[in-house]
Image (cartoon, rainbow, N blue to C red; front, side, top):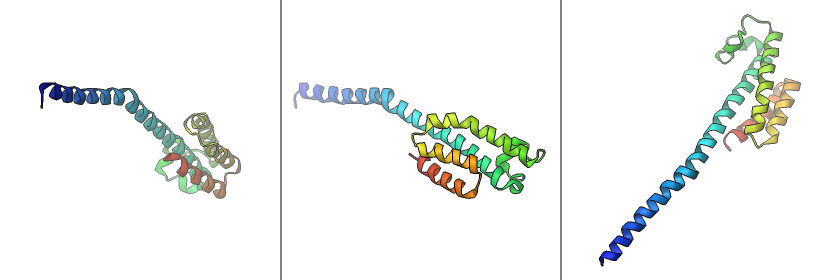
Length: 134
């Protein structure tokens, strides 16, 4: 093996490592960070949906739930709790429109807000499961 072949091999190894580093820094890391951000935001919005469901569907049990501690649920009436959770949920819908490509999630969310029953919640949860891990 001549010295030119050895230099050629070293240059190709260094060149491919440098190319991989540049590609990773400029393309792969930002895509991974974006996906992680969207996943985290979806989880936050979905938690608001679940808290709303706890308050609406199970008001007595929700008074003892840790997930609804931020609403002062034990001090307010059930109507005030529902009103507060609806306001919180409606504030999350614009964010939901930004982070999901699945229009059914938004449709099912609006259906659940309007009907506030277990059947619409089950449909919503089904869509959320499909959407969260996309």
